View (cartoon, rainbow, N blue to C red):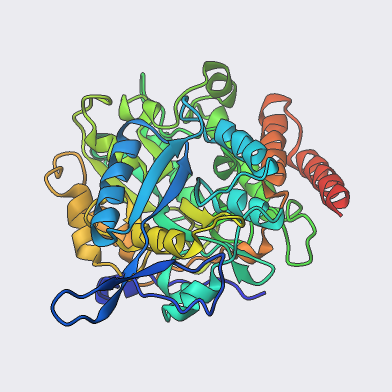
Length: 453
């Protein structure tokens, strides 16, 4: 398996891929767009007219996210007048976890699924492994698209591409500029380490303000596993990666931050069921690692009242021996159901979502869009709240590369993520040693791997 390497500067020079190409389906009735002939009144010639079709788009999102999606759908329908997109929320509580449960039930009944949204590449690959989703390689090839060049992360299972990343969400560190200045610190740049991060957290800690905040998600259990390893849970031979030294080092750093009272205790985070961004935006934490989805929350002063500017920095590296630019990109993905009767139209729709720039809600999944336009759309007019230059330099630095390799993902990746989360909980709450926590994680992961076979 080859490691995914993506240079984000390609985004600065490439133009947006325009238009939606038609495919020659060679008689494949499952993907063929039905056509009708109509008489030309003046010349008597017959012209082809595409039959109107409706595709359903299944998601869990509501509120602003749903509103923005509806705008994108309207733009797609305008460009593709024969295709209507019906937005379907399978849940009413905006929970992606509940959404996946209902999706699996729906797939089990054999109901046709056109397009379905995913909050993480692993969740998509799990369904691809079960045969719920359809590969899209033939459509990408017909459009002349090399997915490794066009998109940040490609959901690959068994050598085939099973979806398109429509939103790329680079992970970065958000820092309160007021807290930074009060501590007499310069904004961090590429090359800083987690030791530097710990020092910053300690220096920005004061009454009623922790230096940093860590949430309960797996990413927060070991960031270097996500932005420095090909896969955060597995080695290439499908054995657990949890025995790597980087896990012990990061666990020990987490405990040191708690001992120095520079971070909100993990026990308090778990007990309070805190939102991942609230502690930072309400000023109770001076610094937080997060995905770029935080940018939209920073701009929403009505929901998150605050008056400080946010400076952005890249995720630190675990040591100075790690190559500068090693990054982690999350995101939002769309895939096509294996039993969809309108695969071509569904493909056109998910490609459109990744390449469109009329409605910017986060960094587009396509690297060929205008980066300056994206930054301007995301942060323009909010310079009092967002340091635009640091955001741009963090996301579009020429050294950015993504070691994450989705071909390592399996149908049980989400179970392995829980093992990582539980391992950190054991370490911080039960006060075990890092070595004991790692041994437990390896044992649990091996059980999952064995059961899957």
